[in-house]
Length: 309
Image (cartoon, rainbow, N blue to C red; front, side, top):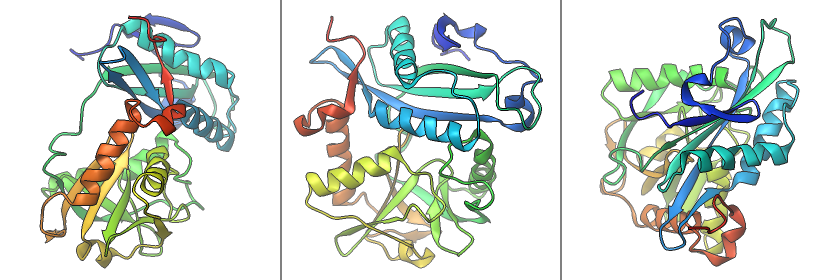
């Protein structure tokens, strides 16, 4: 790729980008036996600092995914955190970035192997999702979300994303920007790569963690910020398909998506078809928190450079 970074972190050291490789016979390649985290780093020009956002929560979830996959933890949590900072420093980023930290079964592994486990970290410059300012147009997929009893979505396993990929490709073929999946009970679950919120009568609502969703770090962030900054308690519950058609506002969220408005679903206009006031407000609060401008939430930030210019 033409915009590839100079370096990645691979199995304990920073190496040139093209050396971050695994074997074609690895269980990661053969069976999708790999887990990952996607997280963001935000550049604060005034502080001359790149803040990794909610890194501890991402490391915790990565460890949970390794546990559920019965994969040996290749590094201690402190080493996992430092790996991210090492690759950011090596690339000398001075802009917003997206970071992908992956753990995978290496070697000529069998389906039931639990090791050896490798780890890689790559980071790329990344701004806001395309067309996010005006809002996106979504549909409800005919593909169902995989249930916890089959391939648990709370596990951030790479193999799980084939389910979402089928839905995303169908949405694109049908002329939509994205899609929501229903779970096996016919309730709204999430998108192929983000969780969702809707607003009805001024109340923010989101599917519960038992709706076959990823337990999103950004989702948790917004629930907290809506309460702490905006004085709004989020209602976590089952969400019917038709609720998004009559909602005042709809938005999706995730480390890559941040807070991205949805202005129509299945060609039903959401609200007045424009980005809603609460969506705008929580996006601004989220970005302020991520750049270190919410003093009460500076504990969510890990500085990359230690404020050294």
